[in-house]
Image 1: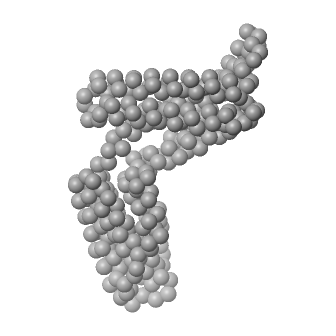
Image 2: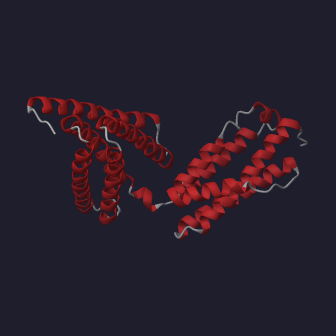
Length: 291
């Protein structure tokens, strides 16, 4: 079939996208230590070459991959995990090609072609077994507890004490103790449940590290700013940003709904912070505390 104009341009973009994704999968496979995961990634890379060949039948040309995109997703895979990088890439690139009227006019069988490709790739991606995703529950536990408990604690301390440095010190001591407690609880929980298939030590590490890192981010404004109220505002904004980033990561990596989970977690954290702030006011007034 001879394609011209807009149809040719869009098919060309699809063809170049296939060879680019082929190279991305190859690069990720080269640095994947797990043999099974490496084989799956190599198979997907081979699928992309086949798709490239299909589009070449329409364009009659060869195209070089987009090396900027290759390095972009390769770095994401190294930093945030291959499952997140692959699902993010596939989600971004799905687009609206299937319902594109220009392409449908030129290639009526396009919807079934792309649907079959997407289904096959999803099946292959589901075979990937990435260790860090096994401990998402432990990370969620540490993050949720740190955000919910600590936004509330800092909000209560802000009005009860009204001194940024003292709030930061009190918060840090509380945070370190709480992180150790959470890690120990997760370790015992995992030890008592042998059906999870995860390491209790690793689960405890993920929970404790997530908790202490989150605490450090929430306390940072109180170390940098003299006004405890301004610091509290930055802490709450930081908490919402942490919730947003983490929820987005989990939503992409685990194929979960994003906005509902984000709104729920943000509402809980900010709601408890508001209640704790009121409690801090009451404690200061009733006990006549002045620091």
